[in-house]
Length: 318
View (cartoon, rainbow, N blue to C red):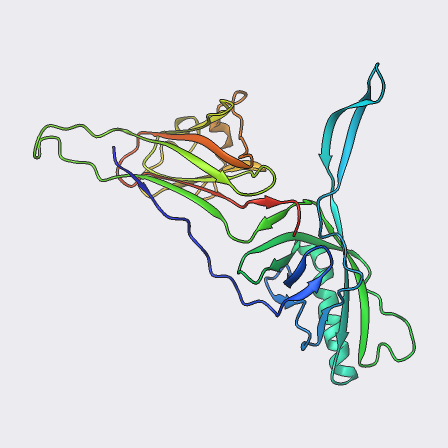
């Protein structure tokens, strides 16, 4: 059975401001993306606002809480490691050609950060000179206050923000993808008797270049009647039986998306298909750092049936 493998898709990376030397990470270009998608350059020293490198912190390794048990021979033994939410301290200078322009900039930036508390997180993006980049989801916590000193608040002022990150890890700005699909079947009698498989059976090695586990998203394109994904190193697997869902079998061109974090299964029209997973045996597994052998299988597959695996590598530092 022919298997078609597509190359990794590299999305366009938006332009970034000039690099600035920042504590913990060196020369980099920083952009803040607010919940509406508007991009705010943070390291363009010619702009009306820019980051003050002195005082930046929280861009290094994630914080952890360690749980240990006393050991009868002395000392302790580590029982559990729990990553903790991260706080980033971000000093920012804002200015304007006159008082009205400064006030407009000050108010707009305040809204760009504080709206994360009502509309969902913003993103702090770090771009390197080689074109690579990482980002982290942030919420405004506090700090949007001026210095309160003489001459401030007229045409310039500065604030020291604290940004809260529920996930302490940085994500790659570019997704890693794996694509498998069936080839076109052949006529049984032309030119010789032949048989086409009714399954897409993909055995491949997935590479996670990050520092910690990633929780992938799977998209399946029909036709298909059931879908099984297996991680070979530990045997963890899950199956989505379309016959056990209100939707029924996937027809040609129909899709279903399975998210591993949070656990979720949705059809292309938004139907909840999580009841079709083989609970309680199902394990919506993660992909650890390094290389991992995986198998994904579609029953009832025909030409056009496909599986797309997508994940963003996660890193300790910016």
